Image 1 (cartoon, rainbow, N blue to C red):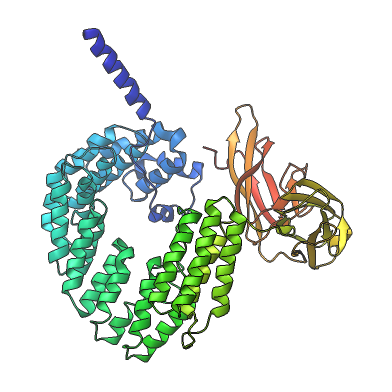
Image 2 (image 1 turned 60 degrees about the vertical axis):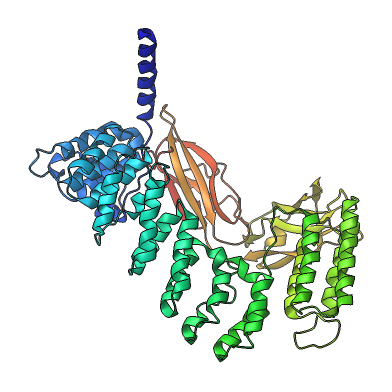
Length: 602
């Protein structure tokens, strides 16, 4: 038995030693820390400052320590922990709990288990409740939940600087405290007259009991009126955005103030952009505002309703639904559109649904192409019969009905295989260069390519290599790109041509292409490896050949760097081995320098 205990403690000790290398909690320097050093985060600047012990109790000292730990903590952990020890001594004349707390946070970030005891001291002995609560939150991150009474004390005090809401939410994730924490926060929501506190309590409660948070806020929403109801509506937007359309439909008929009533309508385009729930794009909401239009007295709101109906785009389908389910949904949607009088004549409705039933049958029998033909027929019929909402023909489709039926049919078509078509170009790489870049190889990506496909550049056939049915390469001549202009590129199969895309030759790039040094690795043998990436702010790929606009110094100029720069930020695209002296990559007038003092790779 004694042997088992020894083995157990040995394993526990080993696990603890291993955990010392791991941060106990997340940490990032505050913006004010950077201000202290004028944004200088270089190794020597920070370390030299920390080595001056006489500055230990000066305001900038911990800010510098924060930065040094954040950027160089992996290699300088022991040095930093040694420098922090001065803040642990409560007998120091300049001791204060703020510095002590900050030092413990940094200790924990560096993986020092002693930080746990240090933060416990803050909670037990400090008179600063804000520090206590912050310490409780850090200890929560490592699974220590021993301070619920302190949290309740802060909650009862309801100080303007703190209230314990965040910590109640953290402890609410634990079954031991969940019910009591929820009751305290829900009480604030239902009783407080301070809107900020109400909202804060609701968002914190929602983190572990969303249903109760919604119910508590809704009780205030439905029992209020005017501006108070609008405020609770806005609070609910953060917690339960998908329930907002029903709340809008409740509040709009009751609200007499024109400005407040207008706030319950989502702005045109906001749902499509994800600024509000996309449920505002569903038929029930469109039907509501279309009917409310007849009761609305305010011209501005009426105008907004008309613009919303004209501009809205139906909700995007559920990507997890099968194509068969989407067809069934469209059959049901046709009924909904008919019931809202957005589609006229029951015989016309039945005809549309019969077409979809045939499409469904085709799909079930494994004939997706025949299914596509039927769905396309449905879409075409809706499009042909489409009339505006003032049309009184027996067979009609209003703008609302057209959008829901036509667009949802298109969503299904996007799922089904295309009927045989000619080759299609999706993109070319590169797609732009400066004047006179010399000859280069162009990649043409698309569909429908064959071994007979030939790439044409500005009307001239170019040597083409067939790679796959989705990829060709073409040899572009230096004379093709010697003058600025827009040059058409297409693919010919001999009898048919693809669509055309444009290759741009410019005197100056519209937006910069920036070289980026990611980091430098010390190889330990006197050599270093620099990792480079880039950021292309243009929307298309850019070709910058090796030469004065794409070179390394000192020589050799060619270090294997990129020539074709895809749009966006690209990380660690290539590496260069060097001796640690300054190595400069020049790219179209911009430079990035690597040296032995550059940011090390993690």
